[in-house]
Image 1 (tube, chains in turn red, green):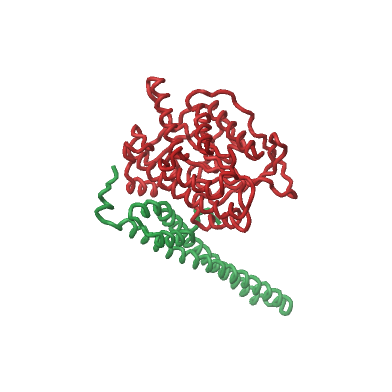
Image 2 (image 1 turned 120 degrees about the horizontal axis):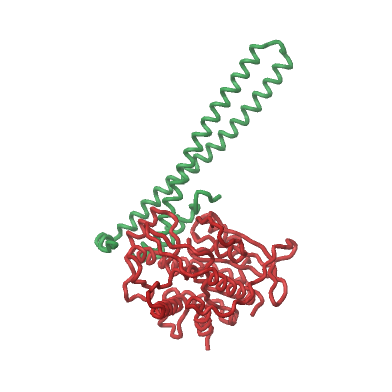
Length: 317
Length: 145
């Protein structure tokens, strides 16, 4: 049984709350604000992903900085974001240094981030790579228009297609999915060079952000659940390598190549894919809005599972 | 529905347009650099003028305390210089903001569309890497430092 078989199995289990099976909610990772600057961080975490996937939101949600009912300001991050904190895991205290890598890696700020956190002997121990199934925010309205004009909707035969959505949303999704692959290729290049220069165990979590946008709002609940299950299976099939490498999507091929490059043994069982809702908000593009589904209970369940997993992986589990 | 035939009928159109946008962004970046350099010079000139006038005022009061005309002349010179320097600074700052907006918007378009163009027009790896290196000179947003 390979590393990917386990990852696919845990994806199915991790996605169950989205199908209405909330199950038990594990204790969230305990994060303390106290930080001793004299202690060198034992764990380095990098949050990566293309622009607009909600990396900064995920960071804020992980730090429990969102208050229920309070408005949240969203906007494009101007630079990398750095955070230092202490976690109390089963294995004791861990000093963590976290960096949110700009989605625009080919920029002046991206180059600085690479120099500081992915070069000169620096490398993250764990990576949270955020993907969105094409629902990444395109910040600039002019860019939205150009992206829609220059992208064709995914054909119905493509497993990533969501034919029930308006065509311009599908065009924006096609554009974003292409950008997601390009971003992963750049991320892979950064990680390979930084991980090559360091030894020791590593971990990788692929986070599906905004899974609340995938829900089919059908009159028949059983049909809606079946449609959601099919979508989530397609999501797992796209982002995770399959049993037969020949059937990998382009994205999954890059993920497999990254892990193979540094060696599966460095990851052990510490590769997972999880859905997380940092904050419920609709997806808007070209004047069309796709509403968010789900409730506060779902948000809290997914977040506590995610933060718990981070704690387990930081412990080397 | 996106007009797929637009680019397939004119091979290389989107790539050429992207490179045009990038060239415009580079010109705007040069303008931005010039404006920032000018602002720095104007700040230095302003500072030098203030120091010079302060020194002249002190010298005048010390050696010719009863000379009102000299005091008025110096005060007038100081005021006029301050107004000129401030006006030039404000104009250059406005130019800088304008260039910065153009730089960010054009480079954002080029950055986001690059993967589309590379795939649609089957760009060579050399052209891809060169264009990415050109884009990497630009900031992410107007708030980036």
